[in-house]
Image (cartoon, rainbow, N blue to C red; front, top):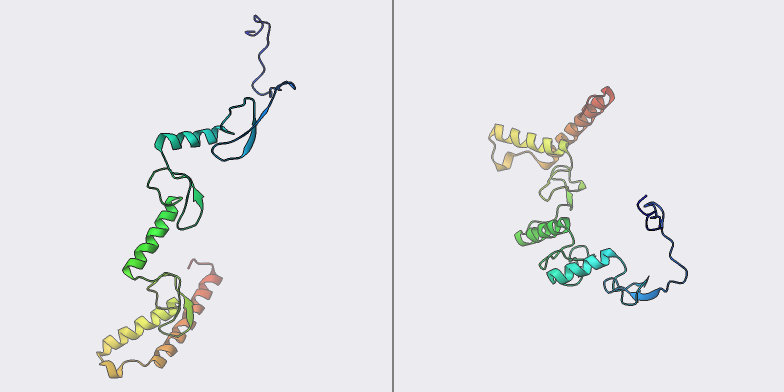
Length: 187
């Protein structure tokens, strides 16, 4: 063996080395995370290689200290001097919200009343007008009929007539989807 010539046998890699009981330990405070830790020498500055790397990156890039994300309020270490958000996802969501506010577009999830049946529903998109595909189809059919007859504004279908037709289409829609579900065919 290589260690036999010198009279010492090297310790295997998978065996932990045991420190002698008479070795003195010093209590220090980490300069990065400010946690107390014990070290083998008096002037140790960091508790771990991760804290050492963090301090080195700050010195190297002259980065500011930890920041608070304006969207999610989480504290994070910036990777660049101009980094505002903790992640790309937070930045995208915040910019999306800023754009919507600037253009006057409302938020997606809103409680609205259906244009056909007047039932309240939570919209999935800001421009959604109908609570279900059946109501959307009923409104489309009513517009097609009105266009086909070439009627003027006074003789268009009344809201009550549209509601009745929407109910009929909805019951047809529900029975067709139930039939497909029982047959096992995909929707």
